[in-house]
Amino acid sequence: MNAISNPAELPTDIQDPVSRLDEADSQLFTLRRTGRKPIRFQGRQLVEAIGRGDSERITHDLNIYRTINGRIVVELIIRRGLPDRQDLCRIHKFDNLSAAATWLENYKPAEDAQIPDGLSHPETTLPWAVLQAVQLRQTMERIDTSFRCMLSEVFLALDLTDLAEAMPTTAVSEGLARSS
Image (cartoon, rainbow, N blue to C red; front, side, top):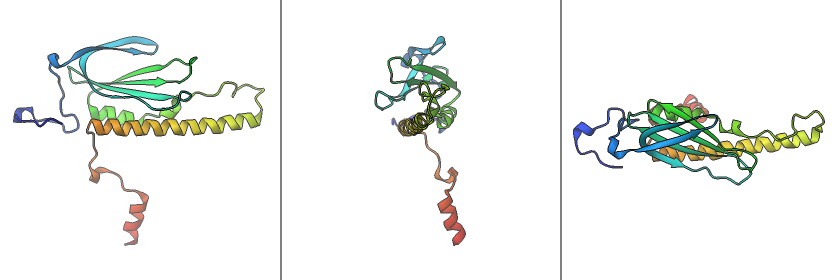
């Protein structure tokens, strides 16, 4: 991180240290959106995260930008891993990094998993359907874990932190406190 030498440059919001960019430090971005017109803006990319995974499951790529007006743009690309499945591109705009982080923390990546073909067909046998359901559940858990790990790295790179005092206590620590 760069040190701030001029007191006039001190951030006013610790969660969102730089709210506006100089146009000279920015570039033009055009991002595609599935089923909608692309979005175009002037700004700077803050972070890029590429999801990891094998070719048969969904991965998520995440790009976060700051516009010259100080808005945050989150680009979430859902890579569906199979040649017959198109990638999905979602764009969300926020007033600050805190709002973007909250949305990302609440995002449910496992819901992007594909339901196996034939699962809802009336001639599907019960044993096959149960096997597919178990495999789907395992896939959903891997997708969620992979996304959460990537998100942790993104938040670390953006220096987004919670104060320890503001974090909820766990049941274990609550139980210890009561027994004292």
